[in-house]
Length: 435
Image (cartoon, rainbow, N blue to C red; front, top):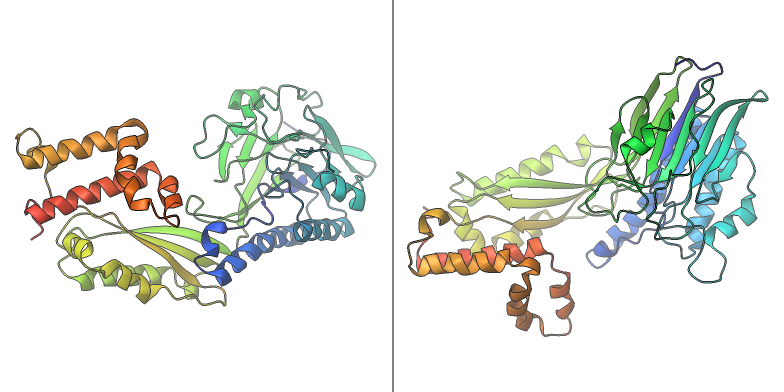
């Protein structure tokens, strides 16, 4: 496909979640939580810097600019200031809202977008998509249209209809068409399926590039004809959002080809690492393995800071040491040092998921006490909802300060407790071979 006009360059970002609270870390380390709170804004600033450095034509933002529909003056001010920087260089910004920052508030008060539009106006080079069907925005250069962006916004937070059902098919082959929408393709785990859409829905419209948002793990859905990309969110916020975070820089060439490149902008990454005790004889071997992890991701080797979680896995001689001593806490205290000057590496958690050296399959069916232990553990772990296991654990959490902990335990965490209880019983009865 040939385009008759100029090539189009753009930055595609989504899921900024400005003013995200990072509540899980606030109790753990207030100073670290404050740094993380600022890191979202730092990542957004880096995206604006990249727009200016590359002198792009467009900044496309596919929803969830703000973490909440509640007005946050600092986030609003920061966002408006960024728009002004782009306006000075005549870089056009096109925004579609998402489920976190819909156009309409829940009650009769004005929305955050009403306030922003009142301050900035809704004129080029800033355009807010204000339709839940489709708005078309023509990109102009030298008094002619060189590209078209079709976008849709969330009017309310919960939207379950196909977001592109009212998008027009591409009818002008002389210019590239870009779709801009906050949506869910297929069944993406960990995300509420707002605005569900299929790949076929997108490819059938004949567009050249789809700028999507909502899924926080960035990936390319479709490589060409059309290119469909989720850039991911701009800053990881928890252990489900590990690895580099940033934005997409793209160029649509006049010959119809599209080049894209991911740019990391997040100043902090969440990382999870595993260490297996399989074959280890001494505690020093485990400490050495953990030391190697820190050496590999030390600030001297990285431009970004790291919040690290280590999971110890496998079975072997050290399992009993970990079960019966305070070794995990000692390791944690040794390595949990927070240097407030980035880049830093902060150890947030060490999780013991080691298991006893027990051949459960050989034990099952023998009809003895060990077989009965396996049967009870399996019945607790396999019950839908783990209701019985929760009821057994409930007396341990009667205290008002602990009651909420049981409610927050995931199924995987409860299954791990069941496995640890089984291991402890086997070790106490001498059934495990840890030599």
